[in-house]
Length: 210
Image 1 (cartoon, rainbow, N blue to C red):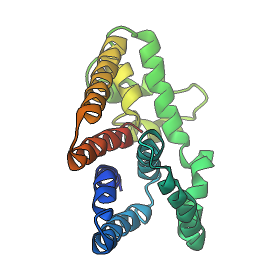
Image 2 (image 1 turned 180 degrees about the vertical axis):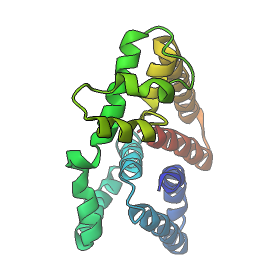
Image 3 (image 1 turned 180 degrees about the horizontal axis):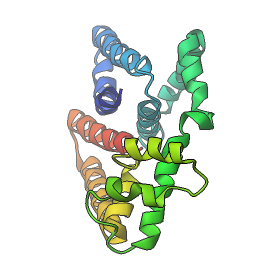
C-alpha cells in the first residue's frame, strides 16, 4: 500500500498531462490510474490512503486542478460499497486499533523531553523504550509494546527521540530547500512534461511525509 501510494502520487500529474492528449490517451491514463488506485484501496493501509489523499489535495489545490477534487466523493462512495473497506475506514477513529502506537509515540516524546538537543542516541529507541512507556500500563501491556516497538511508528518522533532537535531542524531545512527549488523550477519551466515530473516529485514527497 505504501509503495502504491508513492507511485500513484508521482504519476498523478504525469497521467493528467497524458490524458489531455486525446481520447485514447485519456482512456489509457484512466485505466492505469484506476488499476493502481484499486490496489492502493484494497491494500487496507490507512496511512497510505492518507498519504495519497494529502498528495492529491496538494496537486489539486496548490496547482489549480480543482476539478479533480470531484474524485474524492467518488472514492467515498466506493468505500461505502465494500463492507470491508467501510469497516477499515471507520477503524481510523477507533482508539483500540492504534492504542499501542500512541504509547510508542508517548515514549518517543518522553525521550525527546529528557534529551532534547542530541536525542537518546542513534538506534537506541528500541533499547530504552520500556523505560519511557506510560506508567498506567500493565506488565503484560508493557511486554507486548516493548517487544513490538523496534521503532516509534513515526518518522518525526523517531528523529526527535534519537537525534534531537538539531537533526529535526536539519531535516526540515532539507525539505524546505527541496520544495523551494522545485517550485522555482516549475515557475521557469516551459515544458509541460518536465513540469509534470516536478509536480510528481513534490506530490510523492508530500505523500511520504504524511
